[in-house]
Length: 165
Image 1: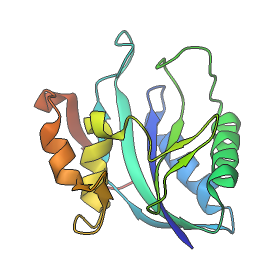
Image 2: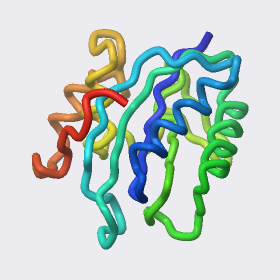
Image 3: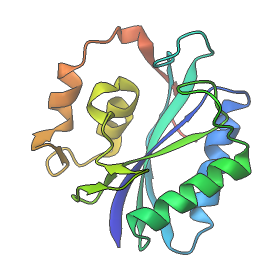
Image 4: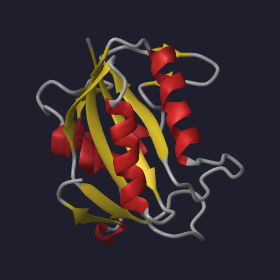
C-alpha cells in the first residue's frame, strides 16, 4: 500500500459538507483507506483573491492505486461533487490535490509529484505538518517545518476552523 497525502479545499457553501463528502467518496473505494485527517483551516484565497475564504485540510491515505489511477479517482470525485473548472484559482465546491505519493517523483501531462506548489502554500503546509511524521516526511530533503518557516504569510491567513471533520 502506498502512503499518499491529499490536500482538500472548498470555498463554496456548504464548504465543510463538501470536504466531508470528498473524504467519504474516497473511503468508499476499496483500494483507498483513510489513515489520518488534519483539522480544517479557514484560509484566504490563493492566486485570484476576489472570492470567499477557503476551508482546507490534508488527509493521509493508503492506497493500492498508482498515481494515474488515483488522479482519475480524484477527478471523478471532484466532478461528482460538482467541481467546475472554468477559472484558474477560482471558486470551487471541492479541490483535491495529490500532494505527496510515497517518496516518488512522478511527472505526466496532468500530474507532477510531489505537487510543485506544495512548499509555497501555508494552507497546505500547516495541516500537513499536523498529521505528518515530521521526522520521516521530507520534501526535497528538508522537513515540513523548514518549508513552513520559509513561507512569508500573514498569521491570520490560516486560522483553525474546526478540529475534526
